[in-house]
Amino acid sequence: MVANSIETAQKRAQWEQFSYDIEAPGMVEVTNESHENPAAHQYTVSIDDVTDELMACTCPHHVHRNAFCKHMTAVKTATDDGTLETFPSADTDERVSGPYTGHDKYGNVDHTYWKCEECGAQATRKGALTDCC
Ligand SMILES: [Zn+2]
Ligand SMILES: [Zn+2]
Image (cartoon, rainbow, N blue to C red; front, side):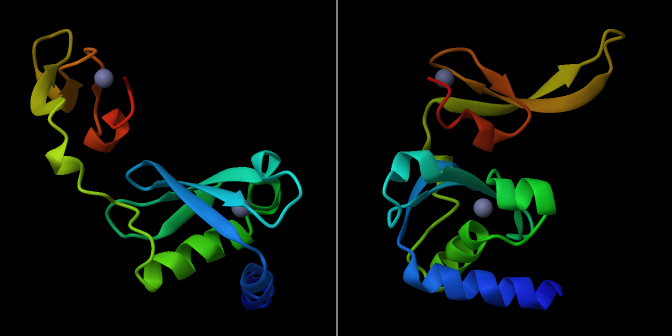
């Protein structure tokens, strides 16, 4: 049943036109350009930064049925053939410094974080600071 739905999604992805926009490393905004109103058909596919596995999509098809949807299929196809880079080199981002060590209220180190020098935003994942300001 799962294999079947992947196959169907792949078939659909072949005739639909998608465009991609990297919102942040591992976060790809997928727009269905073949739809009459592409802006209403924009969803975000997220990818695990460690395993490169596709994690989720914000479309109803994935959210309600937990299906491997056409957006995930399209992103996977585009990354596999090298036309899409889902983890652009965040290391060249001069705004972000770190990692720093964070302390809990007792003064023990309990996490590490990254900081944006421009706006002061902090995050435990460096990738989360790509578009904070
Ligand atoms: Zn989707
Ligand atoms: Zn910032």
